[in-house]
Image (tube, rainbow, N blue to C red):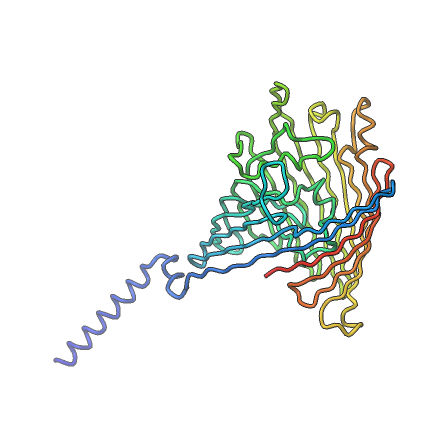
Length: 372
């Protein structure tokens, strides 16, 4: 009887243990074998920029353009924090001078499954290739393409929320964030100066950004996005809104040793009178590179490349503003070499000619960049 009683007690305890295990919430079960972790990453880049103007003057500048620290902490398999702090141009001076210290990302991420995730905090909208992923080893050229400054205002960040995931082989992302400052939109810089950058931002008229990317085909990425904002404009006592819409397409194809990348974008302004008669800004660029590393016996990547970049922040205007089209029309030819002894380290050199408003400048850029 003693043995039977002991077995009965053991069976009862086992059943109770199993029941208590089954009763644990999914999140608690995730934590059973998960160890919270914190990781640090970052990137940086040093640039030398020389310009020979058509008038014969020559300038040269050496600048540690960016130093960025990235922090990630995972509380569980589903909950994490991502943050990025950037120092530009070595130091921070008074507003309007050189240098900047920026919190470019700081959001809580809930990753339920590959199909659905949620982010809230300081986030980056999904527009083109470089706005979200702009580490120096990831793109050709010492400087980012002019397209990624004048058409897509990289780096564009602000306060907001997003949902993301993958459905039927398509990566999707929906962002709702602070809008633009209509008083800062101009024919020369487009919407770049209108970014609020999360500084006590006005969210009365939020911006909506929707993007989709297809990555099912090996070595090929095709994507598009649309961003819409009813932008308030109170300049000079005005009280009007201007619907601003940014649409873009992008493609990246890397068959074998070739790299082909292109982006095409357009900004449209519903109320052209609020942008000095400009109704549209347009631009695109195309890169072509070939990795000679293996052929040259180099253990890393050795990639000569060429780029054509076109931008016009006043591509379509009213008759009264027709002069703006010529003044803001820019073409930029470049050729360069990218040397990567490691995937995370890159040395760059490029030379090109930039033409705008009838003037042509020659540019030489040297750079070194890293990420970790």
